[in-house]
Image 1: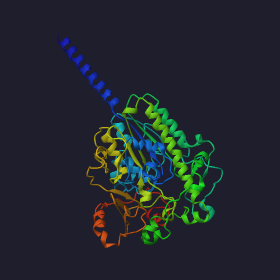
Image 2: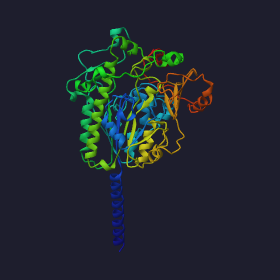
Image 3: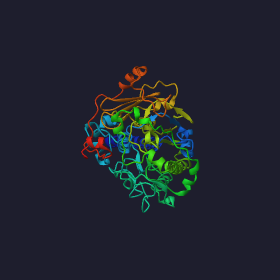
Image 4: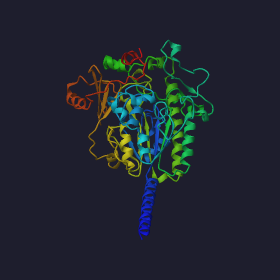
Length: 489
């Protein structure tokens, strides 16, 4: 009798266990998948953001038309390494100390706060997701082996390279080394481009069967320098019709001395030089062509998703790690705290997002992490410093968003952006202040205008008071100012 009772109880136990496990499996299969698309060095020159009248980005625009476009998104830092580290850890550079470039292996070595963080892919893995990645995701791809599966498509993600430079090499002009900046038609076959291979791998994954929900991350490199792309993409932007962006020769006259030092990029071409050599239109043409090329690769991934069995249960987020100057302020570079460098592309497509909506509230790339966990109904990661965008996705116009966007570039150098104004404060407390409605090019520094004192003081309150020391693992020999802040003398 006891054996029978024991047997019945045992059977019920295993039956219950089976149901629980089967239920978990069903729940996991029903959890939404994530396609996470990162684009390198892409400013607002996409059709849906109207950053340049001649840009051609039908696929990115198509994604925006099927979801929500955040028109006022800012990066955590205006260069690749710390921006991506912030997105993946959920921490501001002012908390992590990761203000400048650093090896992926050193992201969590800076201080206790960042050591306790959980990388975004790892967090999804904790809740039953399979994570897959390809291309440039962290600064060096996935050097720290964060993803369950990572595909290396090239030994050099920024290639391929011609036998010699085509139009620009800093050493030709007595400038310091330190950039792959160049432009021109190369190679002949686009299949040689790492982004082409990354898209193909992502398409293959979307055509495959997955037993668990997946987090598929695709990192595209273009339009990062060098601005090389096959001739057919150049042909879509006739050189004689290229429009160059606004340029005011006296633009830097009202910028504080330290602001000029922070933004100095001596290895890069200047707008004045490009005008003198009649190369400005050529460089803009190449940048536009690279954007068009990467848009086609994005389109391949989106098409594969739409044709797959995962189409109705997959969240898509597309973001660019920061912006880029293409002649404004006499510079061709990122690496500054002006809006041209800090404005990012950010689009979400999800069942919770109404199609073809826009939101102009000030948001951050740092908000991607908590937004994805909310959209996927995962527990909140309490270490995240970003804010979930779910309320804005559900109500992009009327929701009262209390936050601003913070961008840091070295300890003490911070930009604060709200819906209309932008404050930049440097470590010596010198400032810039702009009315982005009246002056979208940031030509007129209003920081000394008493009319804006109240607005300036309001934004200053958002600057993190206790900023972490610069990570000792930082590597950034870009100019004299940053050489003085790192161990690279």
